[in-house]
Length: 388
Ligand code: PHB
Image 1: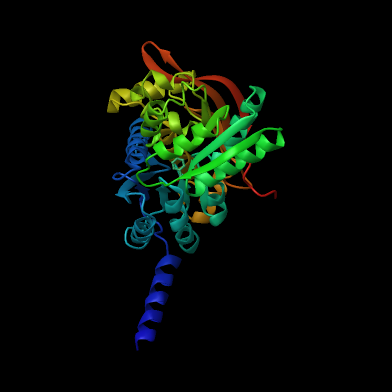
Image 2: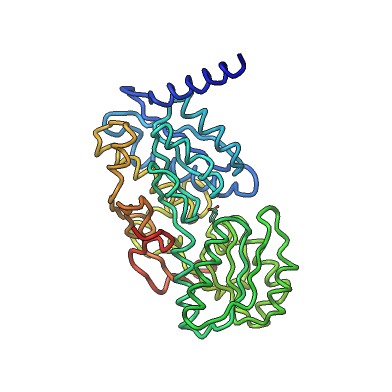
């Protein structure tokens, strides 16, 4: 009996998944982001950017009203999965989007496949994510993109001995691997590879280990939101005064926290896809509108959200409002546009983002700290994709 009930349950669920909402006048986007907890700044940034996009571009596209349903998963993957299921089954959303951390995106991936609902990764950065479902497209970044490029910069700038320090989860492992492999291939050396717990990290003991190894540079990856604590502990431990250069992907000098980091962070060189001081007209307009509306600076997560909305709107225009998941994903493949970060596109083979990676140095501009871009690597594909 119990077994039959369970089977009926599964069959009913399959039937619901097999009949996505059709012919309705409203297109629904389930936006799942962390609005609370350690990753809350990501949710705040993406929510703000999504609202700004709709203020600027309207809430109707291809004759349909676009409704965003915002849900807080606290970056806990079990929550993400439950919420994604509720959004798909009960609210009959046509897209799921957001995903502040890699484990959240991975938890939702099988549901996208089952329900044939496009899943737009606006934040998470581990290479493998887009391979977990043919219905995933990404508008954020991968850690591999920036870690390879900062390794090349380090080698050219006489950094021979590095310590890596990364948050101990998937994107940290990607950052560590892509940086280390490149440094070693170029004749450099990794003298210590340190992993730091993701939850409420105390960096002090790990920084001591890094200092003891006397490297030329410390390569750091922490997810957005943790950079402030890290930089404070880095300077409290005197690593800056010991002449250890701080380098990494740009998550550590996140524009959300950078204004409060203090002058010790000046000179930090990172590789990343977005700086609030990116000198294009489009970005100047974006930052002005964003700061006027919210009174805080947009960071790299915000552009993942803004561009994710653009991808959804443009795909709907191409399908003429048809919300069939296969048609929408096909429409997204190869799409190219200008983002506040610079020119971007969706790789038609991998559905991953192709974008410029900039080398930046923290400097004071009109009394405020910014990541000032000084070199550009154009149209970088994710180096983490297995060759097709
Ligand atoms: C991730 O979990 O994939 C992630 C989160 C925050 C970042 C980068 C990567 O800044």
